[in-house]
Each structure stands twice: as structure tokens, then as C-alpha cells.
Amino acid sequence: MSLFKTREKNAFHDGLIALIESEYPKAIELLTKAAEQNHHNGTAFLVLGDVYRIVGQPHRAINIHEPLTLRSDLSKQEKIKVYTALGLDYEAAKDWKKATINYQKAVSLNGRDLNLQKNLFKALKKLSRWEEAYSVWENILKQDNTQPSHVLAYLEIRVAQTAQERKDNKTAEKKCRSALNLYPACVPARLLKGDLLAIAGKDEAAYGEWHQIIQNSPALAFLAFSRLEKNLFKKDHYDKMLDIYQEILQKCPQSKETHLALADFWTKRGNFSEALSQLKEARHIKPASPQIYSQLICLQIDQGKYNAAKEEVEKLTSNCEETCWPYSCLNCGSKETEFFFECPSCGEFETINGYF
Image (cartoon, rainbow, N blue to C red; front, top):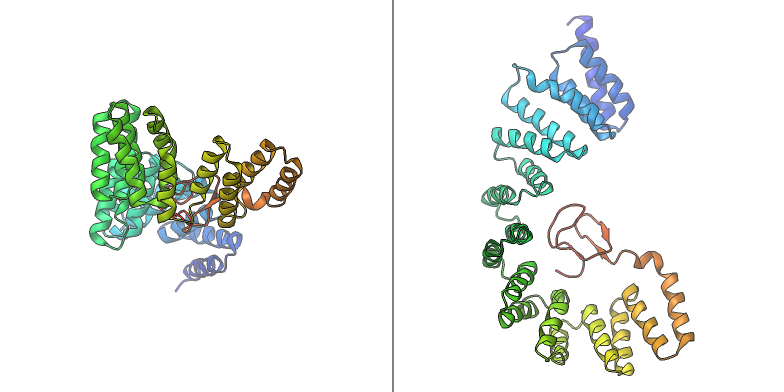
């Protein structure tokens, strides 16, 4: 072996070791040297670009990986690796359109790679191309039936929501029905279907859809409270909400949101002792909830108990850091201020802690 070949091999080998040991600047230096010594060493260019992406320079990674697509000597497996790397590069650069294009090219060469298909699925969701994402997830399910099938229902709801935004309520209702056929416990589908029925003046049917959430998913029934209240108020049956709250607590006694709703119900009727009882029960369930503290403070002020209100404010302040993020994702650990069905960070469905 010539001295040139030996140096090239040593630089590439040492660059890989540096990468494994997370010595990224050293890895870049050695892999750059290996690539310069032999422009035909596509693997050196591929790995070098990957390192630049790892260190947060996706555009440099793109500049290295893109020319590899023009090579005529690449094998099928090498093409898959290049398109996958480019997909990851563009994803890191938040260019979801180009990420999708490259993932699609990789999938067309290897439709059996589940991770690759999941990357494509993620990119399509970022572009709100729900129907294409649906097809990709269907293919994933055919290859691995352990993957969650309820994802398809949530994609149908995305299509339904898009249709509703453009005033195509017929398509929206059709997609809601499809989602519920796939997954009867799909709460967003029940909510939206009820909304569409209410718009059409079918108040009883709308009430039935929202009330069904109590049967299927009592822990999430609070998402329908405002709709149910408006529906019953319209019919002068608002007091029936008390029956609804009690029905939910029979099924799900740990529902903090239902205790809070009951507290508000009793406060409006001047029954402060019962309201306080519900708030204390809610705080026992969720000691650091800012919403509970807020209602407690307002209730104390309404009763003229300013010292008690001051104590609650001090407790809320001491728990401020904990109460800022009431919802968390079981999959990625992301913390959020608002309830979600799809994690804003990792894109997984039904991973919110304590509700599914």
C-alpha cells in the first residue's frame, strides 16, 4: 500500500474514532483531510457532512452532501444514505419541503425502512400534508402492527379541521366520522363533529356527541364543558351541568378540571363553602396547579378574606417554577403550558402525562 493510501486510511480511521468519542473538531479536521486526499471516498464526505449537522451547522452539511447526489458511481445503498443524510440536514435547517423531497427519494429506494418512513411522516406533518402522511402511516402499520393505529384518526381530524377552515363542513363531518370509525375514543373528532352539528342547528345531536366523551374518556370530558354549558344554557337547562360534573367524578374522581368546574358552579350560586370544598379537593389532586390557586384567591377575596387570599398568593409564588408547566410529554419530556393531543416538540400523539 502506498504512503498516500496509508495516510488517507489513517485520517479516515482516526476521524471515525474522534467522532465516536465526540471529539467533533478533531473529527472534522481528520475527515476533511481524508476527503481531500481521495475525492472518490464518498463515505468520508458523507460522514463529514453528518458531523457538521451534529455540531449545528446543517447548511455546511448540505453543501457537502448535495454534490454526492450527482455522482454516477453510487450504489443503491449509498444513494439511500445520501438522500437520508440530506433529509436530516434539511430537517435540521427547518426546510421541511426539501427534507420531504429527500426522504421521499430515500423511501422510493428502500420502502422497508421504518425509521426512514417515520422521518418522512414527520416532515409531511410539518407541511400539513395530512393525506400523504396518512398513506405513509398506513404503510408503516402494514410492516409493523405494533405501531399506534389511532394516529390515523388524528390525521383524519387534521383533514377535517382544514376542511372546516375553508367552510367545507360536509367534508369535515365525513372525516370526523372516518376518524371515529378508526378510533371511537378520538376526543377531537367528537368535539368537532358536535361543533358541526351545532352549526347545522342540530343541538340535540351535538349534545350527544359531546356527552359521549364522558362515556369514552371521562378524564378528558373537561374539554367539552364550555360546549355543554352553552348548549344547556340555550335550552334553559344549565343546572343539568351539576349532574354532568357528578357523573364525571363517579367515573374519574381524580379529575382536577371537574372539581374546578364544580367550584365555579357553586361560586356562581353563592354556595362558597361547597365551592371551597371542591377547590380543596382539586388541590389535593394537583397541589401545584396555578389555576386552583387562582380560583382560591378569587374566592377568598369575594368573601372578604384578604389575609387568606394573601397566604394563597405567597404559596403560588413559592411554587411558581413548578406551576409554569402543567403539562408534560411522556415521550420526550417536553413541558407545555397548554393541553395537547399531539406533542408540539416530538409530534407523538396521546403522550400527555396523566390523561391517557
